[in-house]
Image (cartoon, rainbow, N blue to C red; front, side, top):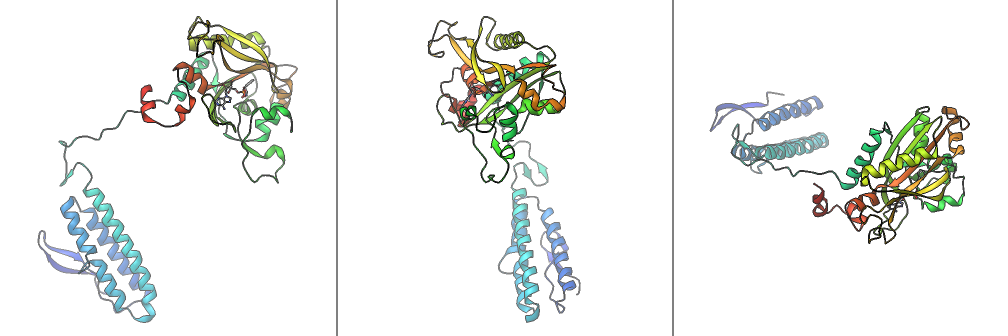
Length: 379
Ligand code: FA5
């Protein structure tokens, strides 16, 4: 194959070696490869040299024009190819045409990018305005709660949102078929009937499985908080969402008592809602804590006198709590958690409802609709 460069005069740059598709006598694979290689280097070099719209148009026409563009020359090459080589040549021509179109489009985007005027950056053009973002109110609330716990020496732990039945339920003392499972309407991942139940995957219904994972990762003493997304098959309304957020807290040591739990939650409520709020504990049931209690904070809006937000009760529910059940420690005994030697408290609260309270938002759905007009108010 001869050289694929021929000398032709160029109107603006004087004599330049400009690429054109050579006529071939030899249609062997090495000859076709050579042609493709030469064409590609010429294409890239010319594309890189394009600096503005005008040059790009000339570049585009040289390669794509129907009349005598390089693509037309490639088509002529295909027409001239002997029958037995048509397939090979056709394939190359298609590939090269796609490459040419891609390079021409890329050079076009480059040439029309703002600020490209000739070789220079035009600093008189207006800049690109990037709207300021803001933390989502849910994340902001989570960070505020986490900061309160960090100041008390807690670390942050995280776990997966797709969890096994074992971590979400069994290790937390919900035996298979236990009715307490029904209180957390579960979304199951489909098609796992053949797996043993404890290995089946669910969308975690609470952040409590992170308790187990954290205990498996570090021996006692342990003080962690775990913020995260959870999912339940709950219909959406002003206070429920099928995806919501919880923050879990777990403290384990050799002598943790219910007073530690009360003191910690009281401190958290005062740090978040102001020093005048009170906390209240009402007996409850969770399989993984014993005793268990619902935690309430006195309504920070009406000073517990009764208002629309606390539904005239004076109290607002924050979440569930209790002393870690010995069966939970039993599940992680092999990791240094002997229920005879240690004790702990845990609680978990809904962040979405807390964020709604904090900003007097009447419907938690607003958090998830992505309406910029709503979100901008938190910037
Ligand atoms: C639990 O999920 C327990 N894991 C909490 C816990 C942790 C108890 C550690 C003891 C020890 P419960 O199902 O009550 O508990 O949910 C806790 C909070 O999540 C509720 O108080 C509520 O604020 C919030 N919540 C529950 N369902 C929804 C929902 N569909 N939408 C928004 N928030 C919800």
